[in-house]
Length: 140
Image 1 (tube, rainbow, N blue to C red):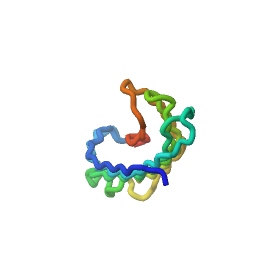
Image 2: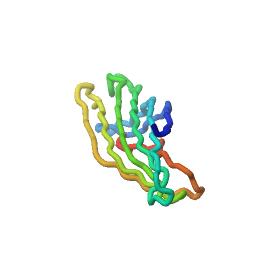
Image 3: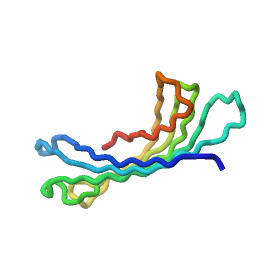
């Protein structure tokens, strides 16, 4: 069985925006993410893609807004599965899919987003393996 790693993240953030009525909103949120990297074996020493891995994560976001804006604390649930590998120790690529479910402020309807994700990363400092643990869907 190939080796891998478990990653987790809990963070607090504050979201600032103007709502549909033009009122400024300041909403504190908590994000919890857990994911897994599965490092794939390479059988050729001169393979085009270096240090390949398959990864997936799940993320839950809770918001703590005023009750007149949003009655529920649930905000977003997100899942992602992706393949990443390096072309060199400086250039890494990622391709995968992401799905997200977000509760509307009325507390009764969900928006569902899904689609492909692609990423290209250049590192000034050479890296043996890039796992893209900080991949963010950007739809929040």
